[in-house]
Amino acid sequence: MKELARATFHIAEDGAGSYRPLAILRWVMVVIFVSFGMQKFTLQSAQGIAQFISNSPLVSWLSVFGLRGGAYVLGVTEFVIAALLAAGAFSPILSALGSLMGAVTFAVTWSFFFTTPGVVKWSISTDPMAWNLAGEFLFKDIVLFCVCAVLLLASLPQVVTRLRC
Image 1 (tube, helix red, strand yellow):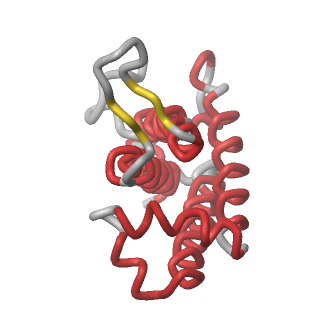
Image 2: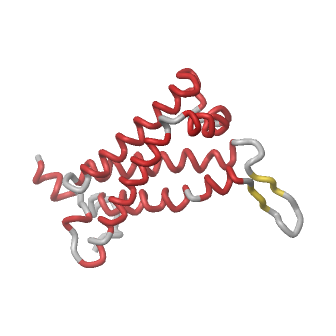
Image 3: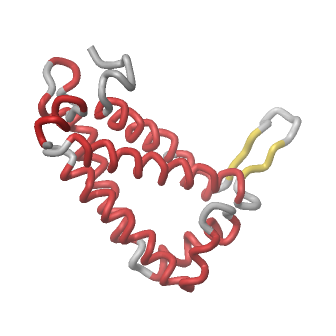
């Protein structure tokens, strides 16, 4: 079974040439997810993300766990993603799963940019788009989404994506 998985899915650590440096992205994402996960266990972080959660049609259900409980669920989820990404250095399927979960995480957090009131003010003026500190905080998720997407695409079998050489 393991040989079949290795024959179809891929990991950067087994690659060569320009593919191998993708391993750096994996370990950076592991550090980021561990860091983000740890932050969710602080009151300050729980209070900080409450505005995003309560206004999101995708994750507002987390409010059933209360302010701290919702943050704990997110923190544990981020630890799981970090663990999957780390294990993905040895298992191509776990690499793909962790990368997919990471991409979904950042797609959801990027959606906060549009669902949280007051984050962005659109206007017809010399500054058509202005965001506050919350918007600046969310804007980084575009890059993190792209990193997870690259890791995911690099993990998938060649029949799924023709991006691999």
